[in-house]
Every structure is written in structure tokens, then in C-alpha cells.
Image (cartoon, rainbow, N blue to C red; front, side):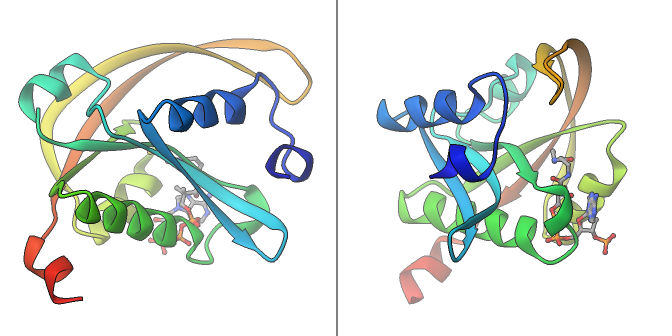
Amino acid sequence: MLCSRWRTPGGVPEAHHARQRDGQATYLVAWQDQEPLGSGVLQWGGCIGSNARTAYPEAVELNHLQVRDQYRGQGVGSALIAAAEDRASQAGRYQIAVGVAEDNPDAERLYRRLGYCPTGAIDVSQYDWITPEGAVRHETERDHLLVKDLDPTLERAR
Ligand SMILES: CC(C)(COP(=O)(O)OP(=O)(O)OC[C@H]1O[C@@H](n2cnc3c(N)ncnc32)[C@H](O)[C@@H]1OP(=O)(O)O)[C@@H](O)C(=O)NCCC(=O)NCCS
């Protein structure tokens, strides 16, 4: 249903789902009725970037956070981040990390507002992505790591 309602070229949702099936990740999708609004992936194996991983070996990483254009600015991204934090706490993991590209100040502002703190750790990643028109684009990204400590007592109190 997700792929039929939200067409994403390049097999990206399938790859996220395969990681979930293998137990390596939880693929979070926000829905409104039958309509997917956005998604993110909680990586149980921790940070992908080597500097982030070395600095925060205990953290789970939330990545691939994306809300569809027409649904942005309505709290969907915040809800996905909250859901990721809940899942992490329920699994007994109390530190969550996100890597934000240095040219993405809007996303960084959102994370900081939600309690994520800059760490100074930076990782450079390279990846290919496929435009809706089918062209392959190569990107190099410098990701700044932000980390939030989750409060274990909150989960126990629920
Ligand atoms: C960043 C993103 C996930 C936020 O989702 P969202 O549903 O728009 O977020 P919310 O409605 O919960 O919160 C709104 C906040 O998101 C941030 N934001 C980032 N990009 C935004 C956009 N294009 N439109 C609206 N808000 C955006 C802003 O900080 C905004 O808060 P503000 O009031 O301070 O401007 C979404 O905008 C998105 O998919 N952006 C493109 C992909 C991306 O940058 N992913 C993050 C990778 S680290």
C-alpha cells in the first residue's frame, strides 16, 4: 500500500522494509487514513557514520526522515521523531542520534527544539539518489550529529 500511494523511485521503501524484516531497523510510516504522510528509519545497530559511531556507541540512529512536500509544517515530522523515541525507550535504549546535513538548518532547528543537542561530531557521506524523472544524482553530504538522552523513568511511569 505504501508504494502504491507514495511512489519513490530506486527501491528505497523496499530497502527500508528489508532492514526491518531482518530486525536491523524499524521503518516508521505516518498515516492519515490510507494516505502515507512521511517516514523515518530507526537503526537499531546504531550510527552509520564512523565518527558518530565512535563518539556515541550506545545510541540508536533515526535517519531517512522525510515528510511529503504537501504535508510539511503540520507536525508529522515531530510525530515521527516522537514515535522513534518511544520505540527506542520501549527497547531499553536511551540515547538517540540524528545526522543533519550542514545545509539543512530548518531540520536542525526542529531537532534542537525537540531536545537534540549538537555534539561536534561530523561524518561525510556519499550517496546516489534517483530523481522522480529517473536521473541519478550523486551527493556528498557533511552530517552534523545531534544526540538526545531519553529519560528511562518516563517510560517506566507510563
Ligand atoms: C524536516 C522534515 C522531516 C520536518 O517534517 P515536518 O512534518 O515538516 O515537521 P513539523 O511540522 O513537525 O515541524 C515543522 C518544523 O520542521 C522544520 N522544517 C524543515 N523543513 C521544513 C519544510 N520544508 N516545511 C516546513 N517545516 C520544515 C522547521 O523547523 C519547522 O519548524 P519552524 O516552525 O521552526 O519553521 C520535513 O520538512 C522534510 O521532510 N524535509 C525534507 C527532508 C529532510 O530535511 N529530512 C531531515 C533530514 S535530517
